[in-house]
Length: 142
Image (cartoon, rainbow, N blue to C red; front, top):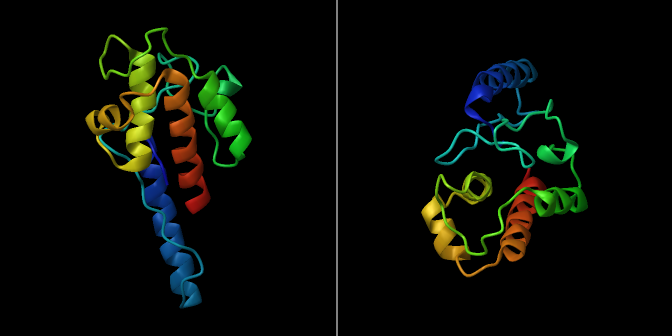
């Protein structure tokens, strides 16, 4: 499951609980959860990159939830704050775009640099649609 660095201890606890349940049942009832993260551990809000993405985000549009449906994921990514510069670059000068590229990177396993090469000719709308598709694919596989 996608997880930030600050959530690893929760996944470790869940792993122990699942192992205990499976051990008592003498069969695998539940799959053991494993944290999934790419190069970046921190996922920032889609609405305000100065905040981390969490259930306590000030805006409902800033956080992706595991129970979000496909349309909600698309809408949240479409509404994600970005700048007006059209081309994709991975730089600290563009923190909102960096955040989306990091999310894409963690979702696909590509490095941020590989994401820029893959989607480098996309305009911002095309990149957000591409990211939405990858997130939906990841959600559907869980």
